[in-house]
Image 1 (spheres, one colour):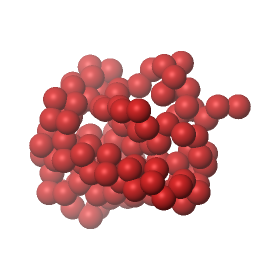
Image 2 (cartoon, rainbow, N blue to C red):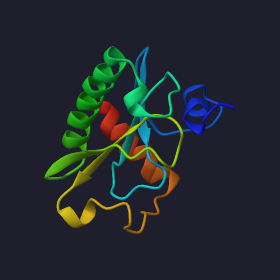
Image 3 (cartoon, one colour):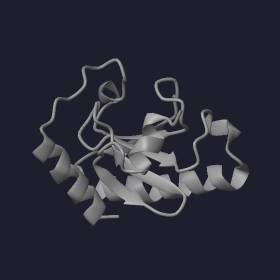
Image 4 (cartoon, rainbow, N blue to C red):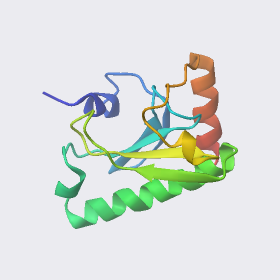
Length: 130
């Protein structure tokens, strides 16, 4: 059975897409810890990020770097952080989280509740800078 991320890539589940190429896909996390919290994934469905072949893993990080620069231009923040956790969805992914303090960089924090319009605006702002 396809992961939820594979279903998002295929367009079966809607997302707030930031960027896409032949191998990678970036979209807003719908349960963000900060505004602009983005997920970057390989299109190849692989559970553990360290099971990706070296070329795909390196490319994922290069793609994430481009997305992080776009987030940094679109979202006022001191830094865009990166986390790889991978327990919540069995599909390799990188979290890019814009922060202004270390307190913001915690998955234990309450998730933001944003409207569809807010998500759309954030996605458009980041995409415009990609």
